[in-house]
Image 1 (cartoon, rainbow, N blue to C red):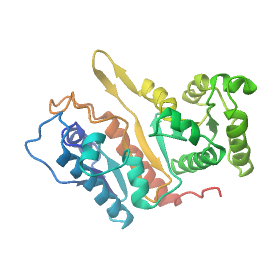
Image 2: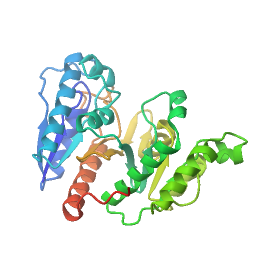
Image 3: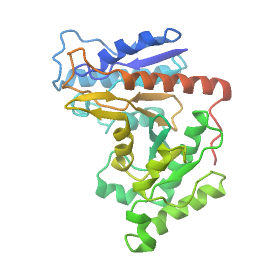
Length: 302
């Protein structure tokens, strides 16, 4: 088993959390991907470092597609440095989809038994509303179902979050539930996907998922899904004292996971970075590799 880890933005905590994590997995062969920079100025945006971070992702995808590594774990990037380095993507997810020619994909955040997939991610909230339609929702429901199966859940229980307060209250607070979300749910159910209930108000669906009622929640937009996962996974006491959670991209022909946090410039170079999220990302990657080898990719519902 070979896991490739991209170097990420070296002005941040990426190299530190990699070095702290890999000794915990003696059964795994790791390949660190990316040119190492010496004498890094920590905590500073650097276009050269951004370019190297992008080069590493591109190389990792090529290796994974050729079967030379079994999974890609990506260390955090700084999006501005990434852009200044010539990589014009909103983030990892979109770049990975582009490099692999993937159209139907989704970001899943994972913390323990809380799993969340997003219909929209790196767009403004105003633009996200235009993208929340039955076609896009159905695509993400299908990715959510298949992602859970790849994680070893045989009959996933999928919940779909409402967009509006009180699930729209029958149109009093918006029509998206009636016009877009419910039709998508109906189509998914006809395809045999196990969706529990109709659109569930966002102020209760994540609490129920955390309690084990659902295996995955399909969130409508970035912060709707990110806030609950990071609230349970991140702990603050005048500084970040505990950071855990995984970002995995599903729908790709390769396995990709990542820590669910950024470059943490404020901690960079101090030796105090918490590797817990990187450790979890590696564990999920190993789980996906084993499940893929044992069961194949998992049959997606057409």
